[in-house]
Length: 285
Image 1 (cartoon, rainbow, N blue to C red):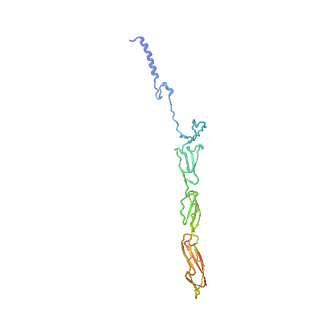
Image 2 (image 1 turned 60 degrees about the vertical axis):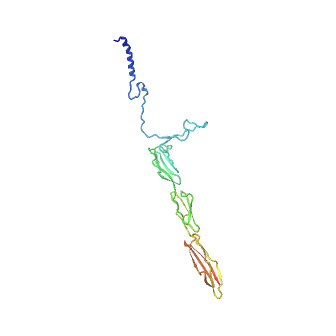
Image 3 (image 1 turned 90 degrees about the horizontal axis):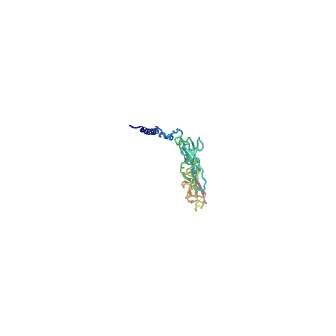
């Protein structure tokens, strides 16, 4: 049996144990003990809405940065809102308009009109728009305007200032003996076609012919005639060098000519039906 003194000693011990049990109570769902309730963390969900824009800084020193000793600091350029990739048209230009303002050249909803420099033609879309998918609604590019190669000129040639590019001028010339009929020059136009029409080189120059010199002959003794010989005329065509035929009007070489004056006429014809004539006279006395 325990005495009254032992009961008094046990009472304080039991009180201490009950106090510790009460202070160690677990609160489900908080993640902390009751004595640390002031440190609870509550995370609120972010409401769904329009995707945030990317802000790309331009050139300039970053905030808080410094340059060389004594050099003034450059203020950073303002952030530029960008959603789609920046448009860059080679040999052309993109004129962009956004409902948010002129600084929003690549933001959602921006509309850009594409154009090309002179000498280039736009292929593809002439206007594109920045879509929620972060892509543009189409694409376009500038292609150089080129005319087809000109065909060769028969009995002539041509020389061009800039090949087959736009505004290139091609001048035509003909070989000696030929004359150009048609356009003397053609220009590559904006629609990719040549101005004018293809010219031709025409043989319009007559052949050159030279007859023998005029002469006199004395009639043979006891006769009133004389036998006369001469060389054929010299004929040359300045175009292709081809003489189609030579005709003679009058006596032929080696003919017996009576006293008096005789006229001999030669006519040369080339392939283009051009002709030239010459004549000389023979006097028999």
